[in-house]
Length: 129
Image 1: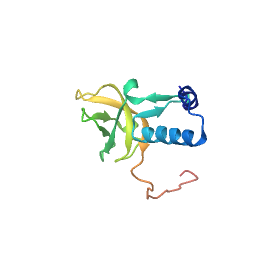
Image 2 (image 1 turned 120 degrees about the vertical axis):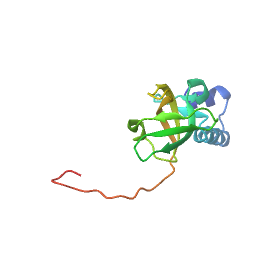
Image 3 (image 1 turned 90 degrees about the vertical axis):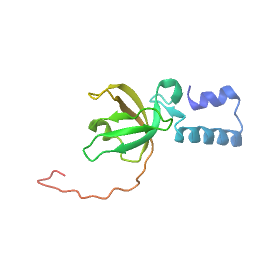
């Protein structure tokens, strides 16, 4: 359901109660308990087979999602690591196993970024950056 529909079903109508309700939904989203899908619906992460954890990047481009609940790490191929950086908190879904028989995952959402700033250089050569 959408957040507005949940509030209406629960009878949350007053401004101060609605503000508290929205704050609780936001806190649960930050903690990885809830997520909002593309349709704007609020989903319980445990019910949609998603795992919340911390991303550990490797210098060779791949990484792992270390689940908060202590389950097995998810291997994240280099293509998935384009979505997140080392130390980010994210939710992922298992999509199979890799060549070494490790669970392989895809990042669904980045909950919290570990770095706010990235320092680097950009080069321009013949109009291409």
